[in-house]
Image (cartoon, rainbow over the protein chains, first blue to last red):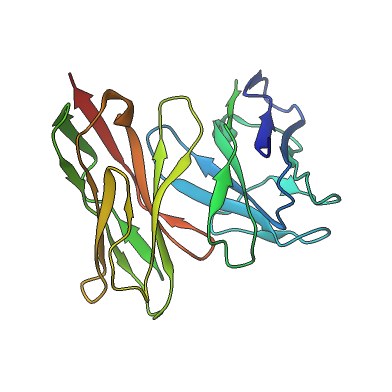
Length: 113
Length: 110
């Protein structure tokens, strides 16, 4: 079944650690996105990609980085986690550049102590 | 800058009743898509309904319908015959790299 997956679902980690949040989709979508969402708040776009080897920064500035080596995979990396990075990170994908409809993953809830 | 505004942080509805969630937006574009997404507690965000701006007819999906007023830049969501499973955060969003409103938390009372 076509879907979008995120691992881990929950992560508690100490300050200064390097972390990678995984996102994979099996729908063959070209465009993928990362959003940051604080509890009970709106989503803010932090990264997106039009396809392989394409990455762009979103509306909200983030210290994280992303890569897109394969169509189905769009990992997000924090080189040195800080408490201010504590948030939920949602990955999404869509089948067109216009982003007519986005499919969301279940999210990763990150806590940095 | 484009914005999406949801002025109701929380709403409550009795089971089987109807509730309307409000959304307004700002854009200079003439053709675009608008969406309502549902985010249940600790569950995946899913698309509820979408509206193409050039279509005058309001979109409908089963118990969910929208009232799209293009000139007023208003896009409200009506949920009929509310069910307990409708309890969630609802986000209004505009196409582009999606611009989201702050969300409305809907509670459904049995």
